[in-house]
Amino acid sequence: MPLIMLFLVSCQEQPTPSETRADLADIRNDMQEVIELIDESINEESVHVFIHKTDLALNRLDNNIEEYLSIMDMADERIERDTRNSIISIKEKVAGIDIRLALLDDENLIGESPFAEFPEETHAIDRVRPPSYTYPYPHITTPETRELTDIERTTIKEIEVYAEEIHKEIVNELNKLKTEVNEFIAGL
Image 1 (tube, one colour):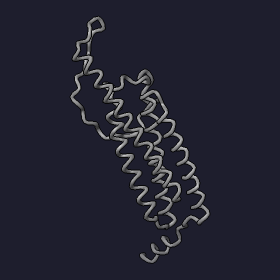
Image 2 (cartoon, helix red, strand yellow):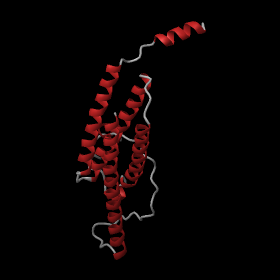
Image 3 (cartoon, helix red, strand yellow):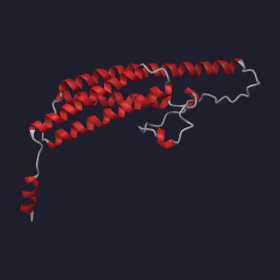
């Protein structure tokens, strides 16, 4: 029985070098599209669309890295040190962006999503982000007829400044991520 199993394992087909190169070329092309999507996200004015496009880019990036690792595993190819380090750096940056997106994606900071009137299935959340720390900003519900107090105006302004800072941090991290992805592509 063990001899039969050994024979079956040895008979499994491995991809040819040309198939592996073609698969890697597909990954390289898709990574270029991810960079373009990151650029679109960076230039997006709507915070809600920015979050959505960033989620899409990070999903595609994760999928491409997993596909690359799978292709290299199937071909019994060794992953070079620079490529491994690049993958680790990309994963670290993605995790940092995910945490910032979790903080930013809060209705108290950026307002209600303009997609709220559509069914959930059409705008499903693409990424599962870590839970964000709930900052102790007071939730202000004021009737429209009442004037805001100075403290309420100050709090609202602080919340807006905080959201803008997080958005800028994400844009900076996305620019660094683009550099890492370009280095990864160059190593393929």
